[in-house]
Image 1 (cartoon, one colour):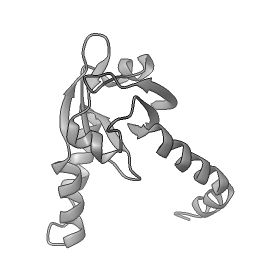
Image 2 (cartoon, rainbow, N blue to C red):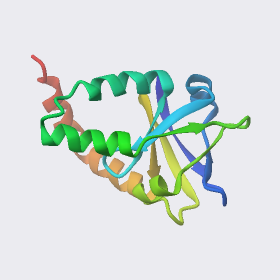
Image 3 (tube, rainbow, N blue to C red):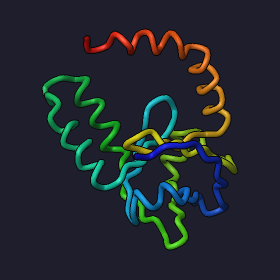
Image 4 (spheres, helix red, strand yellow):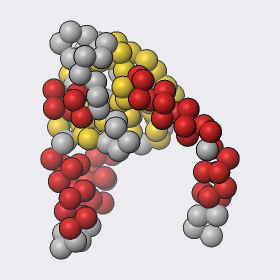
Length: 145
């Protein structure tokens, strides 16, 4: 399980280090893609295969399914994690998450994925979600029942 929040530096070559705890679980190759809420998603290869199967099962005759698949698959790329745990953030994904020009980013473990955030956008998002946490919990407490 991927959990925790870490602030790491983006170096001059667009690389960021995975936290040691994430590295141990994620392995030497990951899939990075466009996420939601202005972040990037990073999956293990095994988890990506599950996500890929779920997305591929969506009805391709539905415009929303096609659009979402294009967003996720079109923005996906396999990334090698080097021997010291760094991974290169592709330029097109860096701009997608407002990381262009940023020297730091936040890596957040969210169970089956890591999210990569612009530090300022993450802070704003987290503060807003915290304000609504009781309301969100109430809504989710009745989901599926």
